[in-house]
Amino acid sequence: MNFFKNHFLKLNRPFYRLLALPMVITGITGCNLENTGKDKQTANDKPNFVIIFVDDMGYGDLGCYGHPTIQTPNIDQMAAEGQRWTNFYVAANVCTPSRAGLLTGRLPIRNGMDTNKRRVFFPDSDGGLPQSELTIAKLLKEADYQTACIGKWHLGHLPEYLPTSHGFDSYYGIPYSNDMDPTTDLGHRKACLNPKIEYFNVPLMENTEIIERPANQHTITKRYTEKAVAFIKGNKGKPFFLYLAHSMPHVPLFASEDFRGKSERGLYGDIVEELDWGIGQILNTLKEEGLDNNTLVVFTSDNGPWVVMDHHGGSAGLLHGAKATSYEGGMRVPAIFRWPGKIEPAVIHNKIGSTLDLLPTFSKLAGTSLPDDRIYDGYDISPVLNGEADVSPRDEMFYYHGLQLFAARKGDYKLYFFKNNPAGYPERMEKLEDPELYHIQHDPSERFNLAEENREIVEEIKEMIQNHSSTIEPVENQLDKIIQNE
Ligand code: MG
Image (cartoon, rainbow, N blue to C red; front, side, top):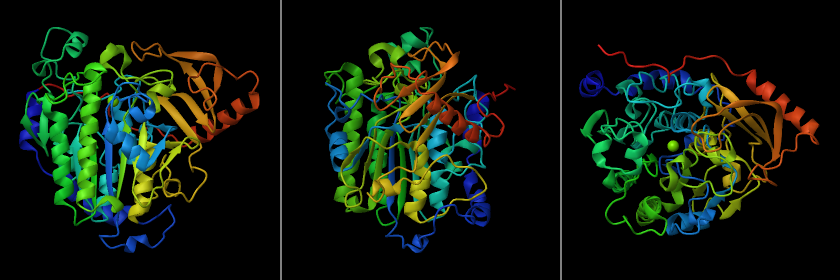
């Protein structure tokens, strides 16, 4: 752990400044998106982007997604004013690979950010998101955006992997999950279900420095919100990208005094209602600062609910499965897009979208180009957002569990090759003798296997997988690297 501390205290060089020049020279040439001339946009024409990414919130945990007791008036209002998607997926079913997918537009199997062993980074991890990856922040820096990362990072906590080395001008948050660095003998589960700040020695960081340890998680949602509001106010004259990755409602749950004991859904509901309050603060700030019509706000979650944490975990609603599974409940998440004047209010229930699509979509909207030296798994979904397209460019989804392709979706059908414990933990991965096929639109709870009577669809999906698999190349694994103590 001394090695860890020393790294933070001594190496606080913002590496990305050195990397910016080669990015300019090599990165922005071969464009695989139509050049619309938008790269001549002036600073004021470029839209601002805000991603609000919550942790372990399930598909069924919001009022506007049908929760019967949790009150989320601000998120519900955001949904009423924007697009609420019901077929929207994360890139992976746990934190680290899901975040890597969102920020790079690439499946984590392409950059070593998922594995069959360690699925996420831990305080003893020695790896991180490789510098060769282009994050949304790095991409938008090239278009003169101001960029901030607030919240949980979880893409490597050593200096060369932190947000300030990946295109963000500033960082404020915890570098990995809020249940890590345990200090109690109670055991993980007991400590999580009876949470106290001192049980988890998680650091709070500002840029590359630790400023508080353990982080006071009771006030963390409030403080992230205050930082986000300050960033928006401080950058209203320039295009900006705010990536607000809330640590909550990941277990252990901590609410501030104002929200504790207030919800009808117990502590988990208190947490979600505090998050909802924070989102209201951000949306109000955008309105007050006159930024509403020039800002795309995206709200989503990094994976499904952690249901083995009993009533401290969320709910996937009618979906089968949970966090750490590739059933729908593990990877289908709430997703809301709001941009008054640009996005017509709607519920998008017959189109597929993914966090993988955010990078290409933002690139298009900001008038930047993507380098053509890598494969992207995301699509530009801006035509769906602005109502120009009746069909989503995405018709498929690949559900990896570590390095194994657990299932794949094409159109309305999803084909499974493995089964697993639907609660996520303990894992019980088992290869199916015969792949199982589900009609996801008719049967979102995945109850009726239709493989027998739909052999041609099974073959069609297998062919799609074959084409996809031929594009996957072996890469250095980042998650199995462990810090060796001196
Ligand atoms: Mg998570």
